[in-house]
Image 1 (tube, helix red, strand yellow):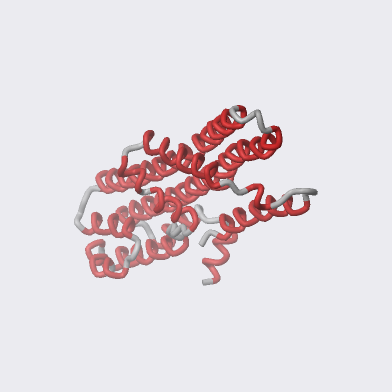
Image 2: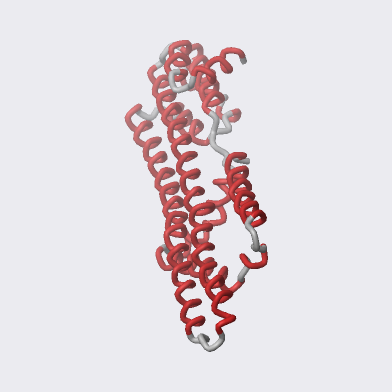
Length: 257
């Protein structure tokens, strides 16, 4: 679980609830209006459906899940696996890596090793692996676009809901006592739209692209490692070359391990 995402959402909600609690004359019930919430949430979802085909739209729950429960590959274990493969290839030849494939869990590393074992040219291996990287980056970009679309339209429907509330309120001007509560309800839709956009949709999009960048960097390390194995580089050289992608803290932890 991404602790920063959960803590950030909880902190934002706690700050708003605290502000409501200490404000003189305010009550939590005044900030709850189900029709306003339906206009903002329903309108934002509907607009996103219009902007995207059904198939990518239905993947939104998975996109939210990836932002909260990311499972990116770790760089240090990937480097360790590649160095082990380089040692086997150096001692016994690239074909001996076929016995190692059953122990490789990362499908991207497995793809490169299998192509190397099959005797594919280095240019072809690199081309296929980079095409896989590009396809993955495209999927991440589409997910980010979905969240940004939701974040862009939610405040717009908040304004639409406010206008609807004002029209209804102005139609009942014969009751002055209802003007104040009516105005408050009308403004709630703007509040809901801003909250959905700035606490959920847009921050989740940024978190998703952060992990996408991390995954892309690790896959670049894998490509470099596969190419080194294909060239028959010394395992120590492979380790030194790939470790340059690690921070100093990560290098210290790897050396200690």
